[in-house]
Image 1 (cartoon, rainbow, N blue to C red):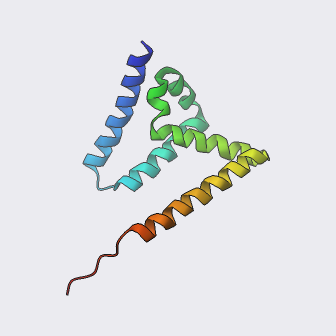
Image 2: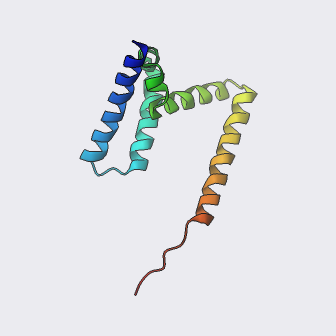
Length: 113
């Protein structure tokens, strides 16, 4: 039953994301950011705990749970926990490093006149 619930919850979340992508002019990055923001909002108001409890791994592997992780990381940072501050700083440095590396690896398209 656990696998079925994980499949149903995860599939439903993916279906919602695909419907938003197919029926709006939003790009993948904007949908990604809105999903993370929705995860933060659901965590703040409480229903995310119930969703994760019922959906299990089907929810934890989705982008909504990244919003939950982001919420709790900031919550711990504002309480002054040094490990949360260090892990957040490392995450920012890694994301920036990957962005710079990918920027150098991406070929520049020359404009045709």
